[in-house]
Amino acid sequence: MFARKRKRSGRLAVKLVTAVLAALLWFGQAAYAAGMFVQNGSGGQGGYQTGGYETGSPQPAAYNWARESTSALPEKFDLNYMIKFPDLKPNEGVTHFAFGSDGTVYFTAGGKLIVIPQGKPAYLMVVEGDDPLLSSPVVGADGTLYIGSRGKVLAIDTAELLATKSLESALKWTFAAGSSTELFVQPIALGGDGTVYAAGDVGSLYAINPANGMQKWKFSSDDAFPLLTPVIAENGYLFVVEDLTTQAKLYIVDANGNNAGSRLLGNPANVPAISAGGAQGILWVPQGDGSLFSVDIEQFIADPTVTGAVYANAEGEALSSPLIGPDGTIYVSSAESLFAFDPSDDTSFEGNL
Image 1 (cartoon, rainbow, N blue to C red):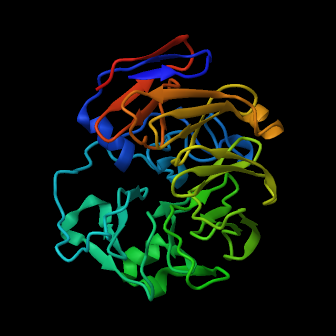
Image 2: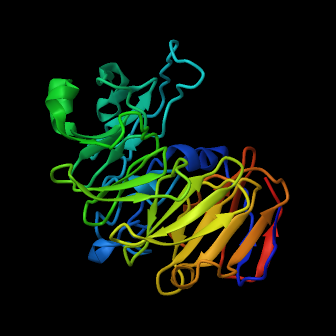
């Protein structure tokens, strides 16, 4: 059960949702409808609107909001198979999935890129690089695949990869960070103009030119702790969480990479999401104590200390990154529960799953 800790207009009604929907929060969705949330909408920036990519591109689910995949899965896409990885170590889990326009599935496991061409496991490919491939893959608007590694970010031509089965042949460019030991384990975020944003584990956020892999700018946090994948507002501002282990710091970064303010959160936090509301949207930050911090983006940029609102989960368990439905419903899960609420009404969260 959720309850408001500070008053804010918003009715949060928990709905019973199947385990399939719970899985979608973590692994993506099987089909998408036109008109859903697009992280970077028309005008090359972002916001709750269609445009920028195809109108049928996925809404934010787990890290799909960062993927900016332009494609919906085919109606008869076959997901009825299981792939086992017996050689994986405990810390080498399978990452989130990305989908190509032809239904090809991409993910990483044990430092390798796993490719299932057109969703057909009989043609499964295992691709290795010089260094471990660490992050969840991200598919750009032109089909380029972006993956973080040790000290670098790779841009891969998926058509060439499927044709040659060679990472070396398909590599479009490699971005090298200042340190060869910096790890890029967070999924890449893509701006509406194609800019590649890579968050490192020593407090650095890089903006990379998608055409040639050259650095546009670099943002450095105050504490040099790992950064999570940023989210991008309509005005080009980025919001990025720094993981301070027992708490987190939420940074505001302008379109030129400047630190425009920050706010210390009393708990660890997950990747935020942006929903419709106000002039630039509403930022939702899931926290490790089971609460959601919500704030108007325009007000937050003007004053990072603005009160906003905090919705508390009685279970007190860490929350996933939110999913925004096409009707504005916000979905968020804990370890055992999935909550859905409508922020437009004025009651507290009711019930739990």
